[in-house]
Image (cartoon, rainbow, N blue to C red; front, side):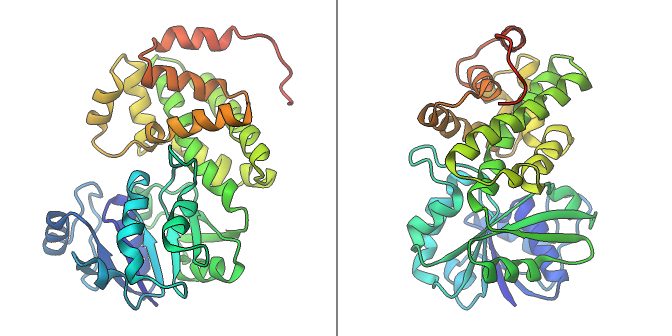
Length: 330
């Protein structure tokens, strides 16, 4: 197939390489001209050491060239740029193409998921697949065994994407619970910030396990109220992605949380991480959803206080531990 990837970050390039190795004709676009020049000339990505970019991958600075005559168009830009990218690309796209979104987030102003944001720009008749799971780009770039979910209400579109990406190193499952998959993708990044804070404070494995377990409970509590399926939260996009994001050295959110736990400000922590920290971007929408659905989300609320109110992490952990007694099962 002819496939384009909009965005040349670590995830976009790892996927572009995978698709190229799957014998597809791959074009990569970036809105940053210098990024395209560097990648095209060096065939290396500075944040994916050791990964050689195949010569067959075409690089372009022309959005029209990236969109026209492609069967699949992958949106691999940070969540805050998904709407603007869709808006710029819409004149070159048609509803016979399948759009794949790999950004994980919820738009703060509208509370729309990324696939909903794309549809609001392109049209409701477009098939948009949410592609999400426990998938660090650093490991996909090394061909390490990985699993992911292709989520779309249109089964044919979900299976097309499954076929395009799947190989002996990447196992792709389909799922029709797009909302659940996207909620998990956005909220798990916030829980990973909490996990990092715990590590930064010097806490151990018990604390991390508690954050992961109670974190998925918060994600599910909100998701079920919004209409997501229970099974999604125990699947790859749910607990699977949560585990890897809360525990991996590759996780930007985990690293950012560690810095927060060590007393570094949110702004300085983002600078030190050096790449987009989607958990921080997702917090405003998560807090609005918490209020809208009147749902108890103490871990996410605590992270919000640390990030946006400058609250002391250790004091906030003590407050979390000393909340009123309750039953584990809602």
